[in-house]
Length: 191
Image (cartoon, rainbow, N blue to C red; front, top):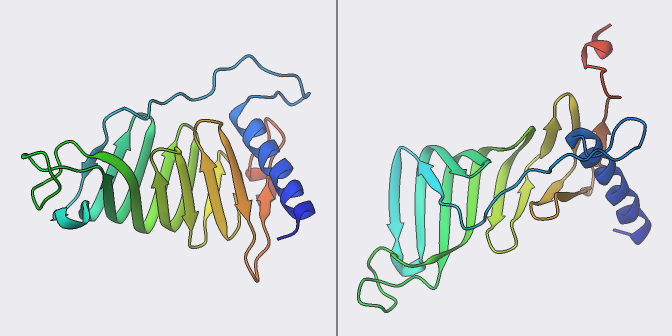
């Protein structure tokens, strides 16, 4: 991907993020509006039909109708693998017991993935959430909505701490976006 294309896409995505979150008003003036907040130390709640522990791999696999919540972030999917780093057993060493003091490293969501964060929804077939970097990477025909506005591409990368993102094109698919002026709706397109 050439530098000019990346630069244009970064500007387009920034416009989408700023317009859709209300950070900038329609006339271009900045709004003193607080961005969404989170705490990466917040607990993670997971609900699923089944759980499998793979403690030798420092993994826990949730299967079927998975719902994951951490603060304002919600992910739904078919399967979710949580990988820990520095996991230890009750005796203080690496082992085959459930991790009790491990730190979350990443979460891999697969199958009909939907991610909700404030007014945004991002959907795709696969998502990887990196805890330390607070980064979400979604692939498999990903699309990001904020109200009626949307943007799609081959891969969407969203950074929570900076409230920024990147949408990348694929071999046969370019990035596309529909962004409505403030106050307009998708009903306009139905006429």
